[in-house]
Length: 224
Image (cartoon, rainbow, N blue to C red):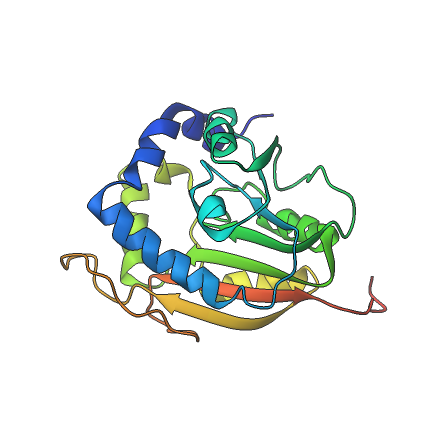
């Protein structure tokens, strides 16, 4: 069954991709990429992005593979050189322990069952492999802005469910992975004239964009 979010991204694929070429899109994208890169240093290939979208982040970060339920965005990602498959994060079409790292960037808010997505992530990660999740922090001013957009029936964000850092951390741990590091950026207010700012190699509570690095355990536990 096709999700509402997939239908929306099929409809707005070109518009969504063009946003990255706007002044706002360029400034935000550069900061967000820097935040992800801070946590990538010791990750091993191959890389997979769940919710690869049009492949903008995958291309910039050197991610090998991407899945998405929207065929329109996958077409754009494929043109960027990403190896893509049409699939949902709740049912990944890959064998156990296939990837050294998995990326979920701005996607957790759109999936129907985030806990199942994280369980699938844990399954396809190699032992000791890394997961990087990038979220708009619901408890930040930017999170409140996107909640307002959702309430106003924005065509894309009306289908999103935004999370706090604590909620995502608990979901990661429930899936059997261990959080090891954070990076943060976007401390400026959404009401300011957008400008480039520092990226922090730690958790900043009021930051609008936060990345979380987690690891799959090297040894199986008694619960598995």
